[in-house]
Image (cartoon, rainbow, N blue to C red; front, side, top):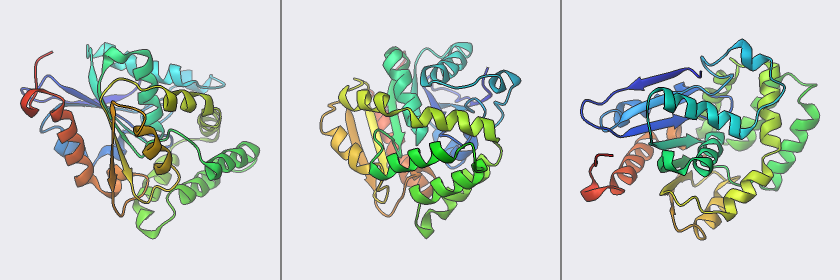
Amino acid sequence: MLYFNTYIHKTSNQWVTFVHGAGGSSSIWFKQIKDFKQHFNVLLIDLRGHGKSKKDFYEKLKQYTFDTIGSDVIEVLDFLKIESTHFVGISLGTIIVREITERHPERSKTLILGGAIMKLNFRGQLLMHTGVLLKSVLPYLILYRFFALIIMPRKKHRESRNLFINEAKKLYQKEFIRWFTLVSEVNPLLKFFRIKDSGVPTLYIMGAEDYMFLPSISKLVKNHPSSTLFVIPDCGHVVNVEQPQIFNTTSINFINQQFVNGGMVND
C-alpha cells in the first residue's frame, strides 16, 4: 500500500485527499495543511515510487498505467474506509484524480485541479518527443531540470522549480523512465477527458502565466457544465506553492459552496 498521512478533524466528516504530480511527493502540500485541516479531515498520499512509497514491488514493474496508479489511491481510501472524498490534485496529479473519477464517480465529491494538464500544446508535444529520445541516454535529473525550466520559466517560478527538482532527486533513473513513458502516452486519455464532462463539481485553479496549459483549460470549461475556472494573476504552473493563500481560500470556499448554506452535511 502507498504511504499516507492523515490529519483528523474533531467534528467534520468530510475528507480532502491530496494527489501530487510526477517527481513530487505529499510534501509539496506543506502550504495547504494548516488551512485545510481547520475545516476537513486531510489525507496526504505519496504515489508509487515517490516520497516514502518506495517498495521493491514497484522496482520489478516495467511500466505503469493511470488506472493502476489510480487504483493505488483507491486502495488507501478503502483501507481508511473513506467512501467518498474531495480530491485536490496538482499538475500530473490532476490526470490521476480525473481518471479515478471516471472509473469511480461515486468516490469523488468535488475536484480541485491546480495547474491542470488536459492537453499538451505543440511545445509540450515537442518536449515529450525529445524526452522519449533522450530518456535512456541522459541522466534523468538533467531532463527533469530542463522540463521544469520550460514549464516554469520565470525567475518568480524558482521556488516551484526548486521544490520539484529537489523532490525528483529522491527518484532514480528507472522510476523516472516509467513515469515519463506513462506521460508520453497520455494523449488519447486527455482527449477523452476534454470531450467528456465528469459530472462532478470541478474547480480548475490555473496561473495566468501557465502558458502551456491554461489555454486548453479555458476552452474546456466552456463545454463542461460542471467545471469552473479560477485564474490567479502573476502566477505560474504550481499554483499551490506560488500563491498558497489564494489557492487555499478559493478551494475551501468552493468545497463549502457545494453544501447547504456553505456548511458541511452528513453523508
